[in-house]
Image (cartoon, rainbow, N blue to C red):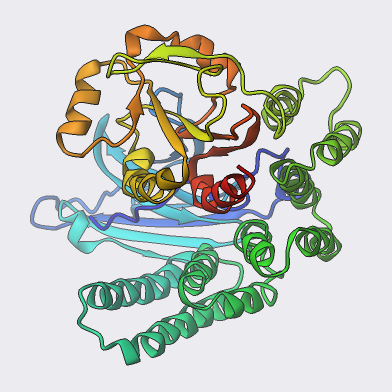
Length: 452
């Protein structure tokens, strides 16, 4: 069976409130099903009692929410409709006489018609799914497979350097074609994101230009406050970036997008050590978005804590532990040295993917006085040992029995892994980096050492 491997929920995911689609009247999604049974195993031509269930489950432990349920008539047909709050890929389960026969992944979106047919028992070889979304996804899949093949050739050194830019631009143009010609589909969103990610590798100027031509698609706003923001910050500086972010709000009437942009503006100010401005904007955000008597969002509470206790310029919270080499390290013993304090399980996949980059950063900047300390949060010491059986260790590692994991999580407000904090020689926080924000640590280190 062909499996479409992708996330169930796509779009803008910034911790904001309900989407605009939930605030307006949803258009129905129609589903037409026709099942038959091969004459060689079933000769009555009665194809009734095939049960079809389309459902959504947030996680493996959660109860399934039924989106659609139908039972075939004697001709093997089901015709129905439902209203869908979130587009995506959903499981469709087929059963008969209480026995599950097969499960498909079906792409569903608002105002689409999905036609499914197939013959049992060889259903996996005979079934077909046709809809606006499935046709668009088939086009996108062809482009994506072609690009991935070309990319492998490039990485393997099988494409001459003089042709690499030409080859990449070809796939940019094909992604753009899918985006333009399949507007409104999930495939169009995937194509836009694929194109922007590709251009971010080799032509950031074109990336920014294409992005600014795409605001008829909501996903473009999410890409603008990540990729677009980073590009502007590098070439134009902080003030131009903030002006750009403000201008984005004039291009949409959707409250959830405007709220996401407001969040990004506050975070930019906070990360840039404009703590007072971030605090002022957060207070305005509170009065604008937080309802009285309603629990504030995680995003708000998290940033409020960061501003109060972990903002750039504040003293690093107290810590003390013994390293695997037997040394005692604390916030007071590190005064006079700039350093990175790193919190992570060694088993974390993102940390493992970033470890080589961290090693290069340490080797370059340790010569200028930067220290690096890792506090491992793994439940088993064997995991830590196994990690370094495959890799060299260059910096200090805290010995797990010598620290209280829960206290560190609370004191340093650790919500995601890996979390890193850059500290200057006075013991003041320069900035906290969470997850993929690690890509932004080099300029901060350079500036810190310059002021050392």
